[in-house]
Amino acid sequence: MFDLAYCTQLLNTFGKSPIMKGEYDSLDIRILNVLRDDATVGYNEISRRVKSPPTTVFQRVKRMKDRDIIKKVVPLIDHDKLDYKLTAFITVSISDIKELDRIAKELSRFDEVLDVHHTSGDSDLLLKVKVKDSSELKDFEVEKVGAIKGIRAVGTTLSLGIFKEEFSVKLRP
Image (cartoon, rainbow, N blue to C red):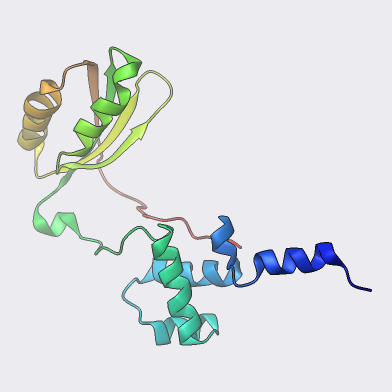
């Protein structure tokens, strides 16, 4: 017997990858985990590691880039070797919560700022900042952060060392 509902469902999903529906499958996860460990690996090597044809791997990576699952591919720089020795976490409290987006965007424009997070608790924003030394940090806080209207308070915590630093979680299917 012919099942119209089943055939309609098949036609609606024909040619669509799981990512098109905002989902992903175990192959996508395996590809992402290979790239997470080394984004310079070529399609043939990824193909070998995930046991899938290179053309499939290429199509999956392209699709994930097109959908901003893979936002960009960048080098991981050892800042210490370039004399950027100080990492600071700066909390920012703002006067008016309606100004949050504007202030976060202004803070995001500064080269020293690696991350800007909207937080709950005593402060509204948390910044991760990388500078060469305490003098540079002071200049950043006074001249740049201090110039932004609507900031009520700033607090700083210095990192004394890094035990673990990752930029992506290891994904599970």
